Amino acid sequence: MAPRIAIIGAGAGGLMSAIALKRKLGFENFIIYEKTADVGGTWNVNRYPGCSSDVGVHFYSFSTDLKTDWSSSHAFQPEVQTYWRQLAEKNALLPKIQFNCLVLSAEWDGTRQLYEIITEDTITKAEGAQRQRSSFLQLVYLRSRNFLTFLGYQRLKATSFTRKMGRYRFADKPNTNHITSTQMVPIVCEVPGVQVTQFCRTPNWLLPPVRVYFSSLKRWAFKYIPFYMRAYRNALYLRTEFMYFMVFGNSWFNKVAEKKVRKYILDNAPSKYHDKLIPKYTLGCKRVIFDTDYLASLHKPNMTLNWDGIKSITEGGILTKTGTEIPFDVIITTTGFAAHDFPFPVRGRHSTTIMDYYNSQNGPKAYLGTCIPGFPNYFLLSGPNTATGHTSVIFTEELQIDYIIQLIKPILKGQSSSFEVTHEATDAYNEKIHARLARSVFTQCASWYRVGGVGKVASIFPGPGMLYWWWLRRPNWQHYIATNRDGSVSKTRSRPSAAQSMATGAVITATIVGLGAWYTSGWEFEASSFRAHLTYHLPALLEFKCV
Image (tube, rainbow, N blue to C red; front, top):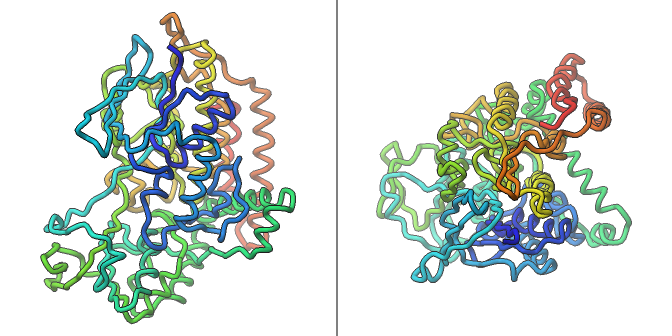
């Protein structure tokens, strides 16, 4: 049986994976399962007013297919969705996508060395499940939605809030002034005749706005001046790395940044909210947010923040914990996603599911956020500990895709039938990253980065983007077990030579030191602080081996 690849999800990661298979391997025997009716993933599903990228869009796009005519530095949902749709059309991917197809389960068959996938048509459910077989399975790690658990929430009736005007209420998750609310509130406040109340629990650090609109001259330069757009994209990457060093990588720099952000909030928010809008936790512990006119909207007479807490949903509105019932015509819930639940059962070599493995490890766990022991030929994008609070998820997913391409090459060439990462390598890698996380800002508060809000940090990668690239630049084959075509099992190939790794390490070290000098130019800081920062990050870069 010829190898076949199943890609679950036609979001950005799924589309980039398919394009990489075609361009880098000339491989087209794949299928993409997409549960909705269009491509784009989160950019197809999330269509709320104000929805936009909080990463520079030239860096939040596929590195091989840059777009010259973005309208602004941080594009809104319709433009981002159109970009991914056009990319799918350009690369003839639409015939490869099975739309309205929900994956219900997948199970590894060790004898035939393939996964059996059960799917369901989301429109004609009466047709029942269809069984598909695939030699590989790649999951773009979609997350299940969170739902409110307030008493009486079942009374809510689904409606399109954009069509019903009146009194609005936002029901937020524990991390309240989060990105969805801060993007949506300024837009909804502009609707004539609307009174808006936002119920809040915990404030967020709001950084100064970064969006700029491109002039026709700027777009012309992107299109016609050689290397200009590529240089601009690279500058965005360096800026995100700078943000990591300032917010997450060093406690001294973090305090300086936090002081500046606090001043920005106090200078721009109404004085009556000053005591409520300054977080009690360290900058970077929760997701940092760029202001999109949210603070300005709090000055509007039709906008109110309520910190009383919600007791229940009533027939006519909301009953607060102080006993006050407030009437509302529309309730908008911005509750985000359940980041640590696996969306469907996948059974591996030992008949246990990925969720079983996660539960046994006190939360999600994977090798490089990409492979899970016991699940041969199963690869994740945006898996455990791959998210960052500073850089582009498109960048990190591209790194994972390049890594996965290297893993599947021997299988497509007929040298092996499957690869499975070892438990030892997975445990060693996770010990390394969680030792770093234990010293990081991410353990200093409750957040969605952690299991149950206060448990294991299972979402965030504890380092700059350059470190993740370094660790994924090529596989350490000694960390994998290969099943050969004849059914025999063997350890895989040797690691790269020490000379190669040392040479690369020297270049990376020089780059980090140079960037550090550039980033800190113009700042007054203690030399001991910068030395501590280098001591924290360089050991991982200087290891003369792949993790």
